[in-house]
Length: 231
Length: 354
Image: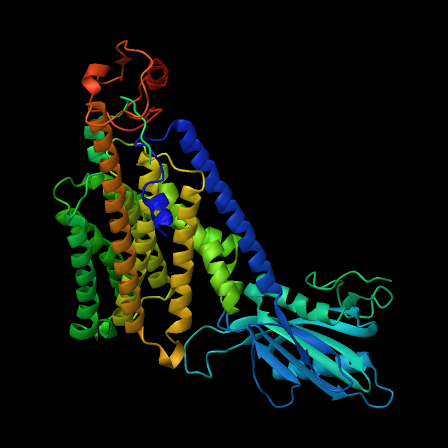
């Protein structure tokens, strides 16, 4: 302790001031320390961004990864629902997972069409932007990107402008059910919030389905979220 | 500790470097009381001041208030440091430079490069480690850079404690900009809670800048090992990160949030940190003077000179301002290879001659 204190208060055995060379050496040491700290900090950042917890959706259904900081909420009709409390917008980025039975002879395309009709009735100014054929854990699926207008502060009595929301529905079959994974965020923040959608899709092994391309309604790849398929 | 000798430094220079400024202690105590009064006014005497104001005036008042803690610090530091105050324009200049550096680099680095809003608060470990390694290091380096690349080589920076004073001025510039941003982002602030937050910021950044300033003062006047300044930067960054981590995690948020506990915590941290810094400065000054006086005593023959002379030839030491001979520098102290930026000399050959 005494030696530490001594080194702290009188690091030199003389009273001589440092030479220019010594000051330059100190300078370099400080900058190297800063760069090293920021490098470690960048690693912490990446770890925190990719930090997730696994959620079991139920028997016969796959599990998904959800960003660790997201808050789970309970809602009727959903297998799982969570939102990002640190979203930059008044509309918190949210994830919801639901499942519906696939009737006899029904397939993913039918489920996707039915969901599109329901969305257009429930959501204000609903507009489908694109749809892609994908594979989810090797099975066929569809990724639909759409937009609508939400008014998240109205329920709380606050006054804020409505928000244009961009969302994606990932629809795939699991057993005799169609699973719908929905990620929605303020359209203005989609680019930054997209990483969370990627994390969720990665846990489901979502890949672009080259064979099924063209089955969708509009353009090709959506938002760069879907990785190239292995096949 | 073994002293070696040269005539590059004279005793008066060392005495100036090691000058203790007891007025600064009083300044710190009075400043802390002043900051408490500032928060007291808005919480007890004018608690509803902001209620009547619309957005525009509220933001304007918030912006004015965000500079008040820094103004109180700087005012008392200056008023009570009467013996040898730093030039007003220098201290103010460093304050403004700190604010400009923070305005130009703080937000772009933290939010655009590191995107801290997306991850820093997601887990306790990312908050703690990110708060130290990213936020702490960037903020403390800004303070270091402002002092190092402006006033550091100026002749006005002539005392060890000046490092602390100028670093605190830079830290307060940073705190003021953060307060500004807080007011603007919140579209005006609740003046009672807002005033507490502004004071907490000012105290915290002044305290951590004080730590940085101590190390800056040391590297200005001492030969330091290579790890010394990086250790200072790391120490200040750790305190910076740890403080805001504890502030966020320990004192409850949401409905339990009590801003007064933040204020008390910040006040204790500021008092302890700055008290420690000035104690260290005084100890370092004592050590410097002790070494200088011992060297003087040895040179006038009161005790044996440790480095035996190899020649009796008179040695000429030249400095740009004040050429002297060895006979003139019997009061010289310290320094085996004195090539001070402000007093270069021919001491290397002098050592050989001896």
